[in-house]
Amino acid sequence: MTQPKFEIVIIGAGVAGIASAYYLSQHYHRADIAIIDPLAPMSFTSAQSGENYRDWWPHQTMRDFINHSIDLMEQIACESGDVFTMTRRGYSLATRSCDIDDLLMQLNFERSDDDSIRFHSDSSSYQSPISADWRTAPAGVDVLSGSALIKHVFPSYSQDIQNIFHIRRAGDINSQQLGQYMLAKARASGVKLLQAKVQNIEFGDQFKIIISSQGDKQIVQAEQIINAAGPFIADISQLVGISLPVFNVLQQKIAFEDREKTIPRSMPFSIDIDNAELDWDQDEKELLLADEELSWLAKPIAGNIHCRPDGGDHGSWLKLGWAFNEQPRQAEWQPRLNDQYPEIVLRGAARLNPGLKTYYNGFPRAFHHYGGYYPMTDENWPLIGSTDVSGFYIVGALSGFGSMAACAAGELCAQWVTQSVLPEYAQDLSLGRYENETLMLELKELNRRGIL
Ligand SMILES: Cc1cc2nc3c(=O)[nH]c(=O)nc-3n(C[C@H](O)[C@H](O)[C@H](O)COP(=O)(O)OP(=O)(O)OC[C@H]3O[C@@H](n4cnc5c(N)ncnc54)[C@H](O)[C@@H]3O)c2cc1C
Image 1 (tube, rainbow, N blue to C red):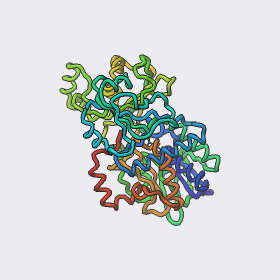
Image 2: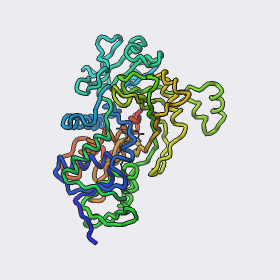
Image 3: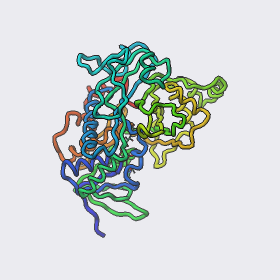
Image 4: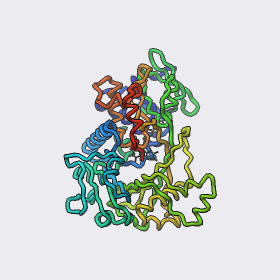
């Protein structure tokens, strides 16, 4: 039986694998490529994304990497006629704390002489996010202080909010559309899609990839492999004897129709950064405290609960999320969600937007609870680049930022594969960083890892 042969095989048709195929075929003229996946493209983790992006990161390397990815997304938005509806109303970080200097330090903002951080106590100099147009939105950060100003600009927020850090190069995208656009371009250049699961990999001069589809086994040959298997990236690497320092953490979201119109459609992605004690009545609290498994729900939980309108200015849905889970677990093809999550995230989010309490008695019928894995390294940086096995590359560990990072990750992966000139951040985002003791020590000491 003939064995199909490709220059490059990409394992995984999520956004990372597709973006790699896109940059290889469109920018590096390498299109003898097959993407192998048992599932439909963009249907596993990439279908669970909150679809948000931001240039706010606790370390310059990640800031540079994601800023470049946002540049690339803006390029694609321009050339595609905005096919993936990129918006830019920013990220609004809300707190009840008054100590701005302490907050600036905690949130890894640096006061600078340029106007990248602007302070406001009235609305005269502040550009409010009425328009979602990314072309006209400012960059940098606006710091809004005082409850009167905050009430004026963000009327749905709780009255006790004292400071807002409004990050302006941030917003949302339709990442499904972005992935489908890049896939269509790659396929038009000759990239093939094979619906099959990779079972094993033998390697010598060439890779022999054993794949299965509906019980049939087949061998596909390749000169180079890109492992873009998302939560299964470590399992696939293990097939060629490489151990990756990557673990999976399940994270969830809910989306529902805001039937009662509790949230203004122009509200940016809003994050309550304060630690949260959930809003139970006394009886509920006592019941929870008496239950060993559930007592944590009656105690303070680390903040970062988020809420945003979904579906544009004329839509009616909301998305709520809270990445409070920190327990690593073995990835499964059907992630098992936590039934309590919807109520937990709703009660958490209602602290910043009290109008949401209207849903305490029941969610609207149009409701969706979903989730997937954040495949992560300890430092929450991705792994992109070559490995000890010649011709075997990885692009993954994209945690909760893979939609916004996809373009820069795909481009970087293509640069490694084609041995092109690499950007400055390349070594630090590859397995090579673990040999840089100074960097690893620096990352260990960071107070935040950028997990949302
Ligand atoms: C709840 C949630 C919210 C998120 N919110 C955001 C957000 O707001 N912004 C943001 O930027 N990112 C967000 N993310 C992260 C983002 O969704 C992911 O980082 C991104 O989708 C990862 O893409 P991927 O291609 O690496 O993985 P995946 O999409 O999982 O793709 C991997 C593919 O590999 C395939 N595969 C696995 N094993 C094999 C095998 N043996 N053979 C063949 N194929 C195989 C799988 O079928 C899958 O299709 C969120 C993630 C979650 C879970």
